[in-house]
Length: 360
Image (cartoon, rainbow, N blue to C red; front, side, top):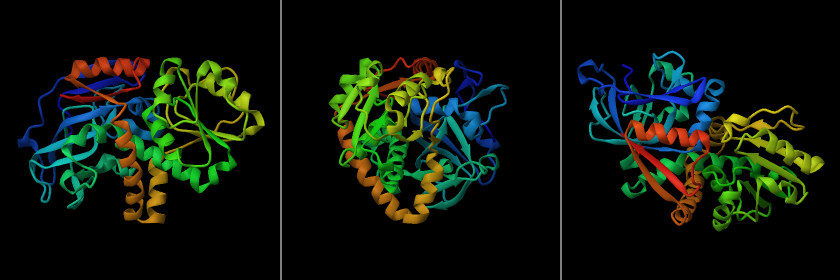
């Protein structure tokens, strides 16, 4: 059964165009054996979700929660949901799960690989997709969970996991022999997470951000130096690599020309400036796209799940403790509020200090 209740539909040809699809909650009478209905309690909306839309066709993000409305899709998100009905042994009504949800009020799942820790949604259309997105963690057996941490986990957990993995890749490759690592869109939460991981490394960490966010980025204490995009040429011309969270072609071109032969490696992660991905002049170094699920699977296989989890949890706990000092949690209720937030996100009209939580 596919029924997301009230949901935000996005025009896949124009990300700014949305409509709120109103629908009743999934009917328990239509629930099949082996299925369960989850009611979404809350989820985070970050620039990461904008990236899901921009690369949705390339990577497959639109495929997780298919809709019948032609040319439209539902952006995935991370948050918490509670089981309201279950015909699946081992998935108990009233239990709450952290995981990957549609921007909607409900999700019908087909739980498999059930354990005290959680389950994997084995519904047919999700099987070709990365398994890390199909796993749901039962909160009572989640070492990171507490009720008061739900907002922070919704906002930071998926983003920081990416931060942690990028840091791990750079560390495994001896930082590509760089003396400094430059992070674009330095105020984004994934960039801040990566900067926190780099803080105690010998390599210098440089942040590039918009002029309005320079002071906020400096106050985190994660970066050795912070510059706005109009002062790229003030970045020291040292042996460098950069991690691009912005997707702005002209900015990258300026940075690459400035660094010249000193540029060792380009890691492409997110797309904040989705409307400015391409330019007239090709980049001298196109870089490599970092796909977190693939790298995570590789490292879990090498380290073992427990060791991987311990390393991640240690760094995540430290980062969240810091983040509580500078983040403002803002709550948005209902489909119309979500639609307005989506427009601000796609336009980049947001304050870097804010963390956005949505519920229906």
